[in-house]
Length: 358
Ligand code: OGA
Ligand code: NI
Image 1 (tube, rainbow, N blue to C red):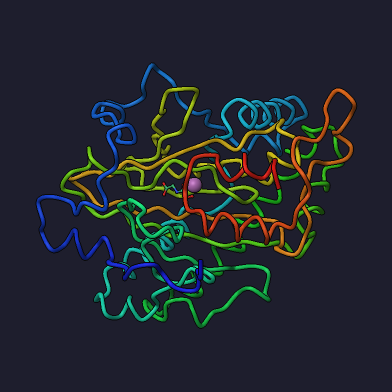
Image 2 (cartoon, rainbow, N blue to C red):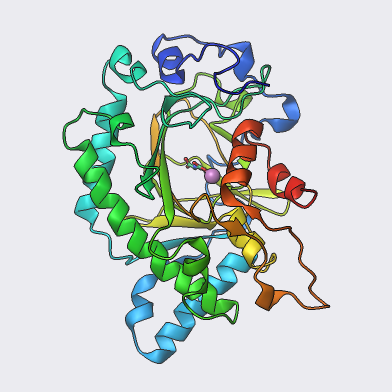
C-alpha cells in the first residue's frame, strides 16, 4: 500500500464533537468486545489497584533512600511497566505553561490548525488517525505530533506558530524532560546489572531521539461505544505523560483488568516502551494501555517519547543473554520498527510480538 497519504479524508474529532451530534459516526463505533465496560473507570480504582507513585527526591537522599527509590522503579518497571513520579525536578510553572499553550493551540480556528495537517509519511503535525488501514475503526482523539531530537529530525517549521510562546515553551519542556529521562535510564540500567550509562549509550548517547504527541480528547456523546485511544504499547524507549489531573481516562492493563490512572498533582506518568522491553530481554515490560472517552469534559494529555535515534540497531543486551535466557527478539534498526508500527496502527502488543518473527 502507498502510505504517503491517508486512505480517506481525515475529519478532526474536535470538529465532530463541536458540531453537536448526539450519536457518534459508525466509523468510531468499536465492536462490542473492544468497548470499555461502563463502570470501569468512573468509579475510581478498580479492585483497589493503583500504579506506584514514586518520589524521585529519594534518588538524591542518603544511600538507604536511594536504594529504596531505585528498587521501587525496578519493581514497577517489571510488574506494571508503569509508575508515576513526583518531585521530578520539572517546575510546576513550566508544566502549567506547557498545558496552557497547547490548550490554546487546540482552540484556534479549525482552518488555522488544518494548515498543519499531517500525513502518514512522518506523522508530524495535526492529525486524527494512527495507522493507514482503510476500514479501521477510528479513535476519539486528535493530536499534534512533532520531533524534538535529534536535531536532524526536528523541523520547527512544522510546529505551530501560534500561540507565539508555544515553540519556546515546548523546547524548554523538552530540555527538562530529557533530564528526567536520563536519570530514569541510569536507574533502569543499574537494575539490569549493567553500567549506569548503558541504556543511554544504546539510545545514542548525547544524540538521542525524542518526540511528542499532544493529544486532545474532545467530549464524546457516546463514550461507552468507542475509545479515546485503542489499546497499545508504546513503540519507543520511555514515555513521560503529563495528563490532566481533573479528567481521567488513561487505563493500564494488569492481567485481564484495566486499571485507571488517577494522576497525582504535579506528577508525570512514566512507562516502559517496547525498546526497553527488547533491550532488557523482557525483564522490564512495555505494557498495554488505552484511553477512555468521556461525555462531560475535554481532556488534554502531553506524551513525551524518549527514544533511541532512528538509525541505531536495537536488540537484547548481549550481557543479559545466556543459555538459560536466549534472546527473545532480533536486533533491528529502531527507525525500521517505528515505520512498521506507524503503518500498522494501534493493536495491543501485536507490533512487539511480530518483531519476534522479523
Ligand atoms: C500515547 C498514550 C495516553 C494519554 O500517546 O501513546 O498512550 O493519556 N497517551 O493520552
Ligand atoms: Ni501510549
